[in-house]
Image 1: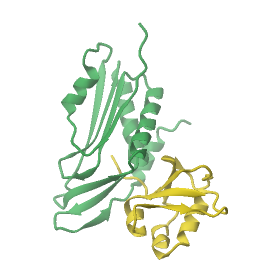
Image 2: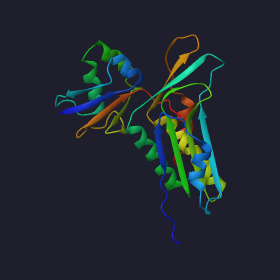
Image 3: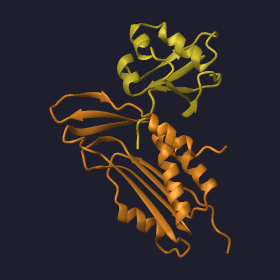
Image 4: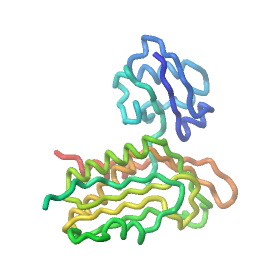
Length: 85
Length: 158
């Protein structure tokens, strides 16, 4: 499954790019699977996603929990807890 | 006369906003509004240490998420109008960051709705603040506060 990933704030800085398109293996079924998969792509991903409990994810621009399935996702955002307002 | 459905005005922008203009736009030519509560979020200088905040946002999702929060506020309170404007980019101390205007026939709904929108916006609208210091150093991303999560929890229905 091909999906656009977009990164923000310190997740973006640590991974070193604002986003990318990845072809994910069939075994990646949930948000949690995706984070684990990314951690295997290199040290920068491992560092960015080290504390994966705090990492927030949005599927097609809506907040998603880590156990949510990613089937049908066009765009997945990965970012730290939000600090707007 | 049937009341027209209320839709929120949501804007995500780099440029500054003007309270008087937004207030006039909300209330002009109407006689059904009895109360407007406004909330301004501004950039603090943190005791002189801060030169600017840099606000990063998730384009598209920022509008969508604040729109969802505003729709929930409109469903919960008898509002006549709701405005939420959030800026992004570099903002110097004293500058505006966010504006929320809630209009209703009576004050309590306006106070509550503005408070609700801000509590949800702080914890779920995709914005991130980075600090730039007066001594030229930068790089600190502001940490999320537990107090903001707690403020949001009080609105959840039992």
